[in-house]
Image 1 (cartoon, rainbow, N blue to C red):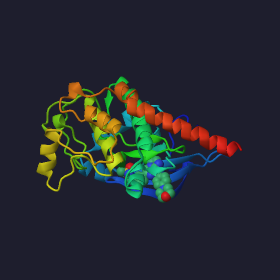
Image 2: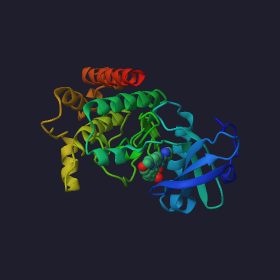
Image 3: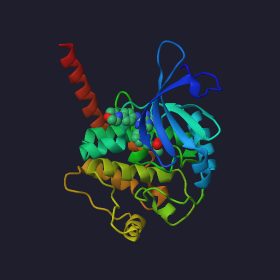
Image 4: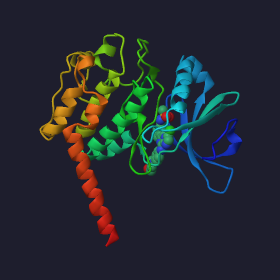
Length: 285
Ligand SMILES: CS(=O)(=O)NCc1cccc(-c2cn3c(Cl)cnc3c(Nc3ccc(N4CCOCC4)cc3)n2)c1
């Protein structure tokens, strides 16, 4: 990629439209100036002042350290970063499909085959992270993006840490994805990500997270007991997978390999493969 080497600065890019607004800054579509082939990137612009007042500068350092070293088709690349007097710029891979959050809001809920494909892809990405002793800790639709071929991309490592960790972090996002051990403040291991993909799987199939309640105290109580219900339309296979991830005892949760080899996931991936084959045969006619 034309982003080899270091010391880039804003002048190396043409800044395009804003893609979205975050807590600490915004994300812009951009493209490299050099060379004839315009290479699209997403540039996340963070204000130093806001990072300092938010007390998250160390978190950003960790995010940069971790995400710049992870290279996987389902993890958004962090190519490089640079700063000027007031801002820090992260040059990230552009995800043309946008946020999974928007896709889920638009579609209300995902078909089972689409959900299973995303579950396979996120488990593959987390296997890559856990092998490098990185826990993500903040898996939720808002942090997941969609690539050019509809593939899932983990897009934000702002909350990731090197395992094991008992770092108490002030939660400023939703707590729907918190596992019991984090709700109780106990130290936590990589299995927090397994709980989170259980919550994600439920939310993709149902359109809302399993422990959502009006009162935060009710959400806490439901999480601690892993108390949730399925709407009738959720298949037996999907219920089996989710019930093996939303387990209070972290050591008893299904492993990432177990998710990727789960009968429901495998059968749904077969459905995807057959649909793709039929589609390409139709195109070939
Ligand atoms: C905390 S934050 O600032 O990081 N999150 C706020 C936010 C909010 C919304 C989006 C995006 C976003 C980030 N992206 C990154 Cl990083 C790479 N590609 C995209 C990326 N790509 C993208 C691609 C296409 C679209 N379109 C497609 C056509 O319909 C309108 C939306 C939007 C975003 N979007 C980010």
